[in-house]
Length: 313
Image (cartoon, rainbow, N blue to C red; front, top):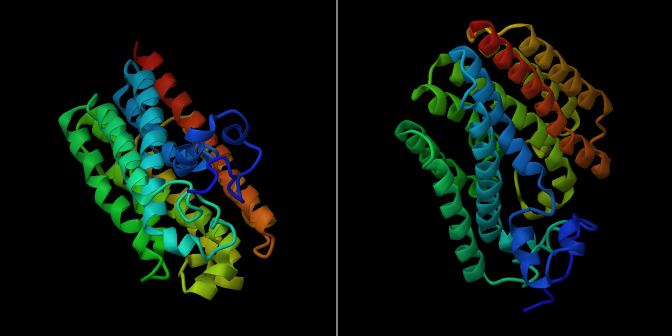
């Protein structure tokens, strides 16, 4: 077993490196608690749908609790998903400069230990899920199939980002399942918009590994689009804004939601204008910035929900 305090190459100087006890560090790194950006990106569609659905229901009484439960659920389930991803990718990660220092390929934990840790995280997620209605519980469980197959997609298709989008956007359905006990057209359109957003930002992310991926035969939209990435982002980010706009209109949302969408769109446009696919550090920063893009949209949807609820009271 190698030194459990050893750092991961693409995530250094964080609280896990400096504050966490050495025995816990490999597990926190498996969950990506040293870089929680993925948890935030998983959470944003959950919060969007919770706010939009609450606005449609003209009732925000349960919204604060739903926001908190979604927050906990997103962080633990993203941790479980990343642990599963690292288990399935441990041999590939050993061949990529950015990932070979992760806990499994570097020997900081064993595969059995990682599997046990994944189960613990999934059980915590189940406890959170059981706080909702039966339809929401079944909807949440249904997402696990997509999560399970995602790590294998980059071996067989140039479009693994679509499968990632299906998984990371699932929260766009959950807010409606929790609020109404059903999934309607508005939820499905919001889901499609979120998927388009994920394809865009994960293409940016994948450009960090494009050269290594080419050497070991890993497929991605970054490699597929190559020099045409800017045009692809215009397509997918544009589609995301349009579809989310359709969902907002379908939900009869007021002006705060549209203001949030405008800010979201402006942020995505800025990413496209600034992107240089040969600059790995810039790709990383732009990918990370999607947390703020998602938060801007959520702020608008939350403002709409509060406005509609207050006008009814």
